[in-house]
Length: 508
Image (cartoon, rainbow, N blue to C red; front, top):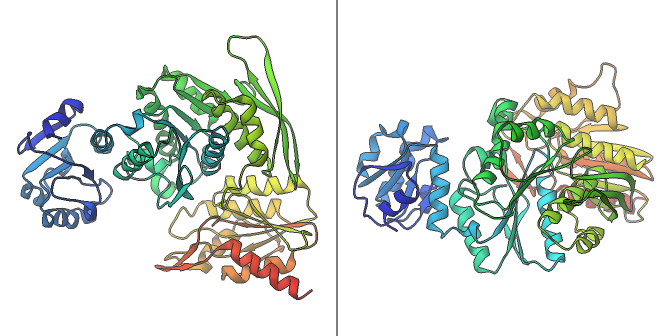
């Protein structure tokens, strides 16, 4: 495509230097992936390495560069024959160009994006399986994996960069996929990874403390999440819609923001005052049950359905109800949706249950690594009414330190015994992290141990687990590694629990 053609479609881009009739093939922010006819966009968040990346692009004889006005003075840019400037947010222009050069794949797909601190992975996973059960050809993009119908690919980011995302959507389109369910992270929204994507549906689950090392404030975190609704508003897709969990943290604020900005897109609410609601919840180690309510459009009455699901815990009642609400707005067969929820595959690392060989006790592995997520997991275990709850968890190094004592207090309050251990300490001293978690415990609290080695901590937790008890191992979930210092080694919580269970069984 000619640069001039791009500028017609994206008027905020102008040619600072060069030939507007030069051809471009694609756009990358990763200098390693560039070829001569690609556009190189300088990532805004890499100031210390920008010159290094520019030189790599020059060595590959790349002709065209896209940057923001503040980077026009970088010394090396004059070596590029064509210099393009984005007069608006650079990340937004980047996403739009990637979409155009891929042939607008999101316009030809039904893309449903879910954002929120907790629940994104489970919800996109559940929606994907509802769609498959309803006979739809679907794609999944998220933290745990990428899936194109039945083909599973490795996922490196919750939300891929704009270049990779649009190429992936193009591949899904070519594979005959109709519906794509994707997690949309706050990082992805703030960094423009989904700019230019035409959404059919978007959902907001909640907002609780996390990623403050990146966002710095909860206000910035909220604004990043809200951007998903502004992208929905810009979408040209017919029958588009949004869904907000009205009773969740920051749910009412998100509703008020939508109202104050007078968005024209239909926005529905799951909650006590919304179009969708759930009541009469029943929990057990065998599954969950509830009543699902939905207001019929243009009718004065509410339809109520009984829902049963194999997924455990109150938060999974929320997840399945939220997914069912979105599926209803996608016009999926209502009977099929309710039926599909009876047997949803377990989401890897999300309240993943591992029973002891004789099923006398269970372990639960979960990715919970924020105060709210840990509280939800432990509360769900309390509601099942086990004889005992042991919680093994840690906090990541080089990340938000303020959540550490809060998570310690939550574990003290809801678990019968707590073992604090290493998560991914990275370059921090693991002992210091454990001390900061311990600072959240009440004075005189003694029902805990500190064990730096995660494998030993899991073995200790299993050894203390009584009949009819639950061992919760939180923080790493689906991850298959542990980062200590700058070294990444293989480590899987589920495997370590299984080994400890087997050792315990042999010793009985």
